View 1 (cartoon, one colour):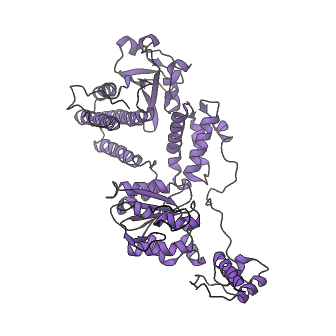
View 2: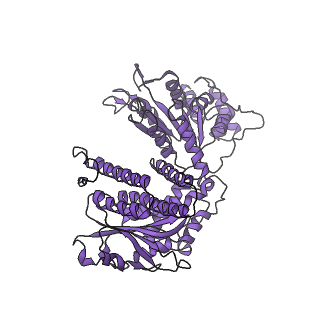
View 3: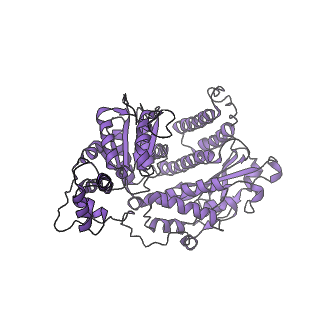
Length: 546
């Protein structure tokens, strides 16, 4: 990736050319934000700050011919035209031509819909007007145009827009992320101007900037949203980030457990060490031990060499065991030993290897109920749930659905070079949907919509054909409840299964219980306090001896 140009003389020092290109771009972004914030600290006059912001966008990041389009304040309603109020790289005549009615061209559509639009190639977009700057005045290469809404009090009052060369080796979504921050800042500056004119206190301005900083910190780890339920979960995560205690993430499928586990790792002192993710439900029982703890050469057929397991590879860092509720009982015992002693023994080996890892686990199951049923060890449950954190479902954070939906639309547009947007009515319909599959389901629906729709502005009616047809209850969890085990009237199965030796039952006892339950091994095993696997093993072993 080509590095950005050196910083111009008005700024402190050029970016170190020895840095990798990606690091140089990040340094340019930080420099831009630092200079904008310095200007805000000196003056809240929009003319000073916004013009210099457009200047920095061009000089530091190549976002050229930037302009801020604002609606006429004297218009009685939202039907009035919008004009270029601040610009960099435009002549006075070009800026004077920049007048747009709501819904007219790309700029007018952003103003009317309140949603960002990216034009990948202005020559291929019939809605692009080229009103302020004619095509002949632009470079002959493919030119992109990016336009984002500027909001004040959740009301779109203007548009931040710019050109950029499409072939530059920098991702468009990186530019869009930065422009979103700058558009938010522009809206806050305009709002502060209004507040100061009304002689309101400076405290409101500082609170607005603080809110923006907090939002940026949340998105830093890919966690998007500002609902109270989400902020509560983030607060609990931050409180325990520097501790070593095991964390159990609870919640429905699709609520973002992996994102939270990674955020916990990145905000801890182990951030520079490995983060290892293991999905216990995706690995066959026969391979789980060798995957977690590794194996020595010759431990089994095909083991031509030794291999370190995931615990050894995570040494010094964090290991995330997803869906731990699906781990078989035999592996739970070995995991408990590793957690208690801080050592692992490879499959086929005898030497103990000490490991220093922080354990983060997750499940969508009710582990207390699993303990009562005997399918999860009680001592392991207490070991992993030192700090349980509940992740809210999407039904508990409906205020975040709009933000998440727009994020997924922007990501899908970038990935598939589309220009699809959601109408306000469509966003309201998304907020009303129950989303039993949570964030994962929302992301899948948006991606399907972007790929298959023929509309650039999706209405609520058009959205309906992409929504799931199921009649899921908005208050129901996505996992179907499993029936409680049924024991025969003459036998009381224990709530917590005892650990029995391999010769705990004779062949006659096994066969009698099997006959009593009409050949149903699952019920016969339960009646004897065994798992189906243990019952089958004892049955085969007893039959082999006769």
